[in-house]
Structures are given as structure tokens and as C-alpha cells.
Image (cartoon, rainbow, N blue to C red):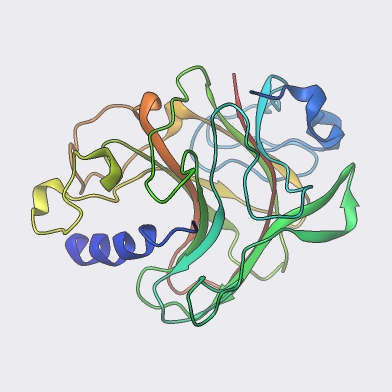
Length: 272
């Protein structure tokens, strides 16, 4: 089962589209007063009034943040800063419908930000994806961290403690959880340590480091410390204790099969 899932996810993961900024360079909405969410463990709350997750206690939104993308430029590329370069794109198992759809030669639809009505503070645009009907492993969106050309390169994020972004549901009836994936040298084929084909069942790729966030209808920050990331354990090097921050490749947001999903994602960055 894990072998088949890895092969399917791997095929989708491989289909990709072609200086740091602190708080002052980001939207004013990064301030805690705009709403806080997340927790140091388990499923972070996505409550606009703050919340406690599995670890208990209210989480403070980081202030020392290096911008990955604030979407305000209206294109599908992340901000070219701090050595980062990549594009947002959709991916799925091919059994349902997703908007924006997967980019193909037959359907060359770019994944670009959507205007927010009303704006979220100073933020006027965000990434938005929705879909349903997926029956194999699901769907998601992601971006590479260091892919200036066709070949993905490792990105060194060892100076950071985690990632932070803002999110909300577009439809109150949509799935209220979302899995955030981060690939590193252990789980990404580009790292050269795992078997992309899946033939070597003990050394499979795509068992990415992940964290499950809880979503709500109000905008809220999701704060994910790298130390809280975990793998399912079916992939290569199952005993790896922590993500290899010196060799990251991509960040993705995934929804399981059988779920109707509808989510907005905004102002994502690394925090120290």
C-alpha cells in the first residue's frame, strides 16, 4: 500500500512548474492583534482570536520573519530573496477536480494569487485552491524553494526555526485540516538518498516531513516549528530523527482523499 501511494505521490511531486525580509517588510497583518493561531504540537488551532492546540497555551506569531511569498505581486513565483526561487503549482491523483487545475500542455493554467474581498489588513491577494472527488491519495499545492531552472537544488534553511503563514477556509463546509509537507534530502528524489521508482520498498522517496494544521473560517496564523515535523515512517531512513534543514526542496499543502477542500493561504515565511 505504501509502495503504491509513494509511486502515485511521487509522480505528482515531480510535476513542477518551470536577501531575507523581516517583519517590517511584510504585511501589517503579521501582528498578533490581527489574530493568532497554531500550537507547539499536534493540530494548531486556526482561531482568529488566538487558541491553544495539543500543547496548550496561546501561541505568539513570530516577528523575525523572512518572507517566502506575500502574493502581492500577483504572479505564481515566490519572492526571489535569500537565495530562494520557485513557483506555486497544483498536484493531485487525477480522480477528482481541483481549481486551479494541474498545469499541462493541454491545460496551461498558471497558479496565481486571487484578489481578497475584503482584504486581510494590508494584504490584498492570497493563494486559493479548492476541489473534491479525489479517491486515491488526494490533492494539494506546493512550491520549490530553490528551483531557478528545471533541476531542483537544495535550500539551506538551517538559520530558521520554522515556518509561519496565514490561512482560512473558503467554504465553512470544507475539510478543516490540512497537512503541510516539507521535503528534504531524505524524502525528495533530488537528494539522491532514496529510490524514486519505489522498487526498493525499504528506501522509498516521498515520505516527507509533515505537520497537520486545523483550519477555520477566520484568518489565523499557523506557526510550525521544525522540531514538530514528523514522517510516517514508511520511506527511506525511517529512523531519521529530524528534518535536514541544510537540504530542503519544497513546501506543500495537501488534502486527503475523500475530502472537499477549500483554503486560502497567505504571507508565508521562515521565522527565526
